[in-house]
Length: 281
Length: 215
Ligand SMILES: N[C@@H](CCC(=O)N[C@@H](CS)C(=O)NCC(=O)O)C(=O)O
Ligand SMILES: [Fe+2]
Image 1 (tube, rainbow over the protein chains, first blue to last red):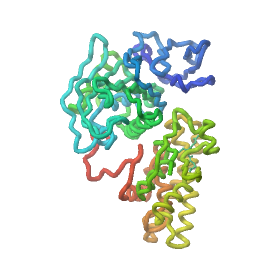
Image 2: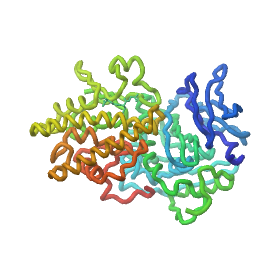
Image 3: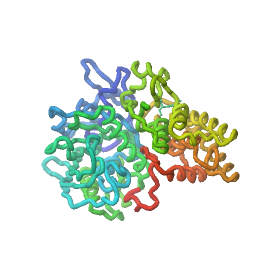
């Protein structure tokens, strides 16, 4: 049995638009669960013993809390902003720790090597100075003022631009990034990674986006993001150690890793250890 | 030439790769294979009743099989890729094009099962995939003894394009490629071809570039 700190969080368990009447048998934190529709289009998530969990239908996905929610599901105000296209990218299964999936998403230094000529390109590998904080009032990790040169920042980008990013971790297995929006200066595109922990070493990842882009066909938006995430998948499945070390140990942080360091510290202080290892790497 | 395409599909990628290597102009039409399962919808089944991608369309010609599509693209834009040097080479190319269907049915299915949760008999797919890789490895070793660096001869042909993607993507389906040194060398030769393009899981050669920060 996992600890309350772990059970009281919200987790994505299905994509609403893909959940048919047959329902979905899946796993959460090492235990089997069943997701389906109850009456009146209300999502229902049940444990193996039939016990119903707290659920929410938000950001295109069905969310469940196996314990007693310690707080309401986090808010993404942009999700309700008129004019945005909401993109259900679909599930991708990855043999890695759910925390590794989030950590990789926070790491901008891998762009030129893993997403070559899309999100990064050599020789533009330098990550400049940026701010990282654990925002106590909301209990979230935030990185801001992250600047990076990108050959093709979005499907809607015509050529190379310097993109500004903000990163946010509102729940242990969720990461949200905000990035400069080429067609709409002053607004941020929202790209998320919702991670469902099946086991400590296995997760299902549901990328989701809320973009300003009236031009690109929906399928191309999906394929752009799937291309990016599948490039990450090959890296994630080979990362060592498999579990995320919460003590810095021998890993010497570079500037690019500061967000990762804050994320690990934040996980540790809230006792979130599912997919983590406490001894040094 | 319109290619009904999915970015993560090895069978679509081989067509994009050949087009890039030959300079053939193709227009991509993205199919929402996942999560939308557009290839199973009535509109798409009118084009290809088998419900598979890739599909190529040009002036009333509809091709629903990747080997046929490769043959067509090569015939139009790069006839040397057909491997018509002699009777033996030509027959070898035909044989590997047929063999590629076994790769789709084994490694291809293991991969969509492991990544995208498509249904499959995963043990049978993996066993079939391992068998295919062993056959490719053995064939490459034999070719090497004859002084030939590619599957059908001493130059790349459709045989290589057809078998290369699944051979590299096997780990996505939980099939290790560590045991096949001849395959590793061969895939490096293909990735070194001028005009080579990538897909997720098949990266360009990075030899002269710095190590990734966290590989
Ligand atoms: N014989 C086909 C097989 C291609 C194939 O299997 N494509 C996969 C995607 S890579 C597919 O369309 N699968 C249909 C499905 O999984 O429903 C060819 O080589 O073109
Ligand atoms: Fe990435």
